[in-house]
Image (cartoon, rainbow, N blue to C red; front, top):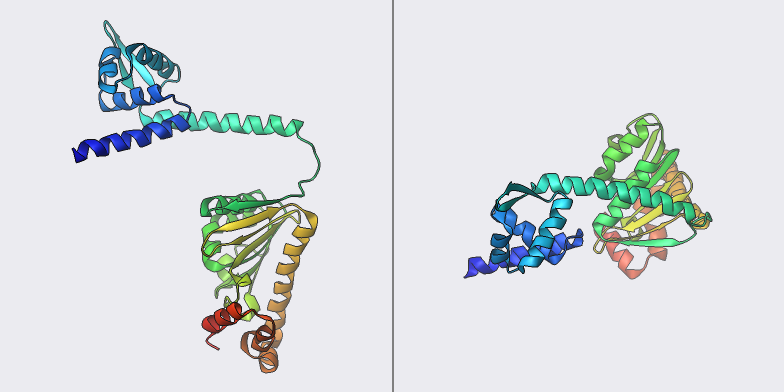
Length: 288
C-alpha cells in the first residue's frame, strides 16, 4: 500500500511539472504511462490511466505532433514514448529560441527611455544568476566589493571578463588578492589591509558594471538584492567601492600610523557610530 501511494504521489508531481511545460492533464498522464509501459494501444493506455478513450486518442495525437510519442505499428496502432532526455532537450532549445525572439520583438515596441527603477530580486538562484549576467555582459569595467567565498562562485565569469579586456577593480574581504588577479587589468585590494568582515554593511555584495548599472545583495540569511540602472544609485554604488579602494591604498601605506591613532580596524571611529548590534558583531569578528 505504501509503495502504491509513493508511486501515485510521484506521478502527481511529474504530471504537475509536465503541465507547467504546456502538457494537458491527459497528455501528461498518457506520456508518463507510456514511459512505464511501451508499446501500448490507446485502449491499454486508457485502461491503465483512467483517461476516457476519446480523450486518450486526442492526447496521443497531440503528443505525436510534438514528437513526445511515436506510433510503431498499424493494426492495432501501438505507441512508444520519446526518450525524456531527447524530448526535453528539444523543448528547452525551442523555448529558448522563442523567448529570445520574443524578447527582441517586444523590446522593439517598448519605450526607449532609460530604466530608472530599482528592481528587487529574491532567492539565492535569482540573485546569483543576475550577478553572473552582469559580469558576463560587461564590456568595459567591473567594480566589486565582496567576500572571497562569494566571488569564487563567479570566478569563471570574472576570468572570462578579464580575458576579453574588461578592467576589474575588486575590494576583497579575504586574504589572497592574487586569487582574483587574472590579468594585469585586474586590480584587487584587501579591505582595509586586513580583509576582515565587520558590521552589517560588510556582509553585502556590491557590483557596478560599465558605469551604467549596479547590484547590491545581502547574502546572509534571506538572500535579496537590489538592481538598478538609475544614475544616482549607480554613482552611489561606485562611490562606496571607490572609497574602499582609497582606504585600501591608504592602509597599505600608513597602516601602522592609522592603527596607532584609531586602534586596530578603526576601532575608535567604528565604536562612535556603530549600532549596538554592529558593535557586538565587530567585537566578535575582530576579537577586540
